[in-house]
Image (cartoon, rainbow, N blue to C red; front, side):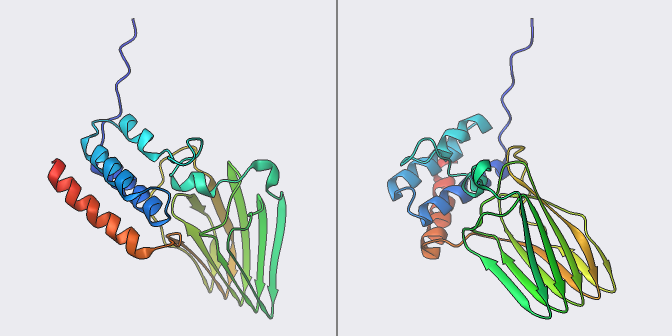
Length: 216
């Protein structure tokens, strides 16, 4: 006989991640104050990771998750296969809820470009972004909750990645950024999505701290 399946032991990192997701959901009016308090209490009473999963179900739409990467994933059929963004002695910028092509080529020659992808949506699997910066610069801001791989190189320039919170979920979309910076720079960083109410987000984190003390 096979040994019974052992549930994944819960850690403080697991709890903290769920607290952040619930706080974000509250800040975006996806859950009420009562639902927040009820779920935060359950977070600190949980004994396994499996007990945390039901807490991330959207109460207004049980088919959707409150988890970050679920909100960033688009239907594969809707995502363009290829795209190009170029700045030659000029500039470009992109932000908002646009669909990121599966294969995106970015060129900045004596120019610059800004990609704020915190509200963008991605196909499942791997999204490839290839960046060539020659005497120019490209800045890419990715949302938390996306797995990121950076394999760029630089000559008399920089190809930098400021890592965000590690994402261990194998189902999360992957963004792979590659390319070359020659006398130029590529800057990859992570940023929280914008909330309808930053005050509510901070209030939720404060409530979590207080509830955690009481439950423990």
